[in-house]
Image 1 (spheres, helix red, strand yellow):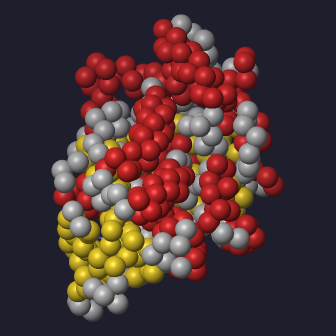
Image 2 (spheres, rainbow, N blue to C red):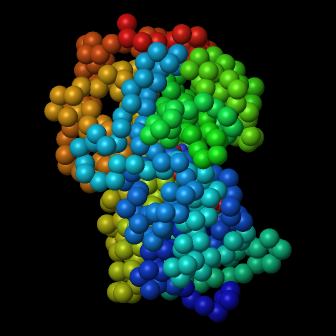
Length: 446
Ligand SMILES: Cc1cc2nc3c(=O)[nH]c(=O)nc-3n(C[C@H](O)[C@H](O)[C@H](O)COP(=O)(O)OP(=O)(O)OC[C@H]3O[C@@H](n4cnc5c(N)ncnc54)[C@H](O)[C@@H]3O)c2cc1C
């Protein structure tokens, strides 16, 4: 088809953001082309979905039965100290927002394939194993050059270009728009295990966020007795070490709660690492182009917001593109509403993610107040309901004020490990002393 067809939009990348956008455009009767570098299914990290994503999946036409048959239901998020002595569970049903109160822990290879197949079923054209190698944005349209696995190149044309290429962020890199977040210079090291222990019943699919002195771990139970496990911490805490298999295993051994959960488990994926992954593009739209999902920005994954934000952006971007096509006006102004929502959402989640690394924040998460339904508001935030929900927003603002006060006044019991690590950091010794987790740190209330 190459150069002959002029599409309404070309979407670079078929992850959740690109697949969502292409599906919505197709549902609106628009011609969307997705150019995806990989042959799906492909491995991707980021398995924990938020309840607020469920209505989006419904609107895309992804059958709920299919999701139920493939993935583990997730009803709560829990926070645990490294020695396991203190656990705080937030069941989503306790939130202040009435909406779906469960989600899924998904194997991303399968989940992303379902979304992309769904886009094709809705009418989008999908090219797999085809890498975008060049693009051009002109006043009369956009041109994309892509290379297939056999080395052949093809040129595609459209009215609008959407970059959904994830961390590759082709457009933002080319235009020099990417800004690494100076407050979230973190790395992640992770893998999948078979046979890690987990809760039973409704709690089986709980995501566990395990506190480390300067960072946190995720434990995400998946279907078929698989578990995703990873550590996120400031890059500086590596102090020159490589975040490799030995490093991951040593850190697990030093964290009693984790060590117990994987004691008889077997690692079934290579250990992977990614660093400095929090960034934002100084612009997310321009004349005839938009950035969606991780191609626009990525916030630290502590609140599992990535897939939701990317999908929601897919919906909003499809709306503004549809309008621009109807009016045949493709200037940046036409995409203003999209950029505005994206910035607001990213600010909210970013502020919360940044706060999480301070001791006073984690202490408040472990001992939330029930006054004015603050705990319930945090529960809703953990379910993803915050950006468009006033009832959550004002309570979260109050919660954050309490966190600031908790820094100086003892409003909650302390987490000594996290306090000491932060002090060491401030005193300028963080690089040398922060990476190690001493046994028994982050114990219960003092
Ligand atoms: C350590 C870690 C843990 C995370 N945990 C969670 C979590 O628990 N829950 C959650 O919701 N989110 C999580 N995330 C974030 C989540 O994975 C991402 O936000 C999400 O995948 C973004 O979707 P996307 O479609 O924007 O990008 P992606 O899913 O990355 O998709 C981009 C696609 O573009 C393709 N592509 C790239 N370059 C090209 C090219 N040149 N030509 C054609 N195609 C190209 C890629 O092959 C890829 O398929 C986590 C992220 C990290 C790093």
